[in-house]
Image (cartoon, rainbow, N blue to C red; front, side, top):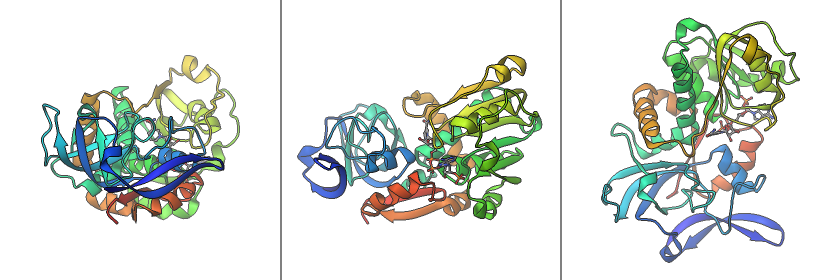
Length: 327
Ligand code: NDP
């Protein structure tokens, strides 16, 4: 038996609760993992609250991330006792996920836990932090360096945003952090932000072009914010679009792209090829100081993940939430 959050469909809508489940209910897969830590990402919050159709079939164990120890495996490259982690691949959406004490998945979805990292640290990073690293890698791939100019991070006090601020500042970029929570200015400055901006600045539909400012940007908000970021990008600027916390719409013009050569780089973490994942996690292990992770992390137990979900969607949670599945 193992404990898990289970989302079930009832007459009153979806409902999530902690349940004691029989191992026989675990889905198909060639590797069974004893999950030690998971996390609550924005997408998990959507699944748990039922606010968006993230869950494709019911009942579903949510949790797009987990880290733990392999209990049994018939995968040729994975042995019992190995420390592993998983991000995405539809886990927690189409396949039972990580907000549980046990998970059974395809071994090909797992990557080894970086040797210098604990399972808890990996989940403090989670999909949000791994996505922040993919966004940084996209800026670099398109030629953005600290000498290129200022970088903007939107939704900066959230999970993707806070890790992006820390990673970029650590690499020597001048980072402006945009937030709706100006009371978190000190937190953002401690992460390395050189300046904190009020998100109200980009809340309205922009003109096709604005004064050139950003050499690069990591945007988790979408909607008018993303359109404003593009309009205010410098000649040759690069915008990594990761999220939709402010809306899925994107009403822009082609002006930033055809008159300033701005690049809009889309970031997907879920189906990212394995080589990129290994590279991103190797860099996260090397570049993200443990003190930074501690600064951005709140620890909770499995049952508390249900209560925290609506707070994440309300933008009321700072940084990252780690779930100890045995607590
Ligand atoms: P969080 O909830 O931790 O952070 C989101 C932040 O966005 C909030 O903290 C808030 O920042 C800001 N925000 C929230 N609502 C609004 C709003 N209405 N208008 C403007 N800003 C808002 O989520 P994550 O950082 O984990 O994820 C952020 C986004 O990235 C989500 O949309 C998520 O789905 C997406 N994502 C995409 C991935 C991919 O593969 N492409 C992977 C991971 C996440 P502040 O308080 O500082 O203003």
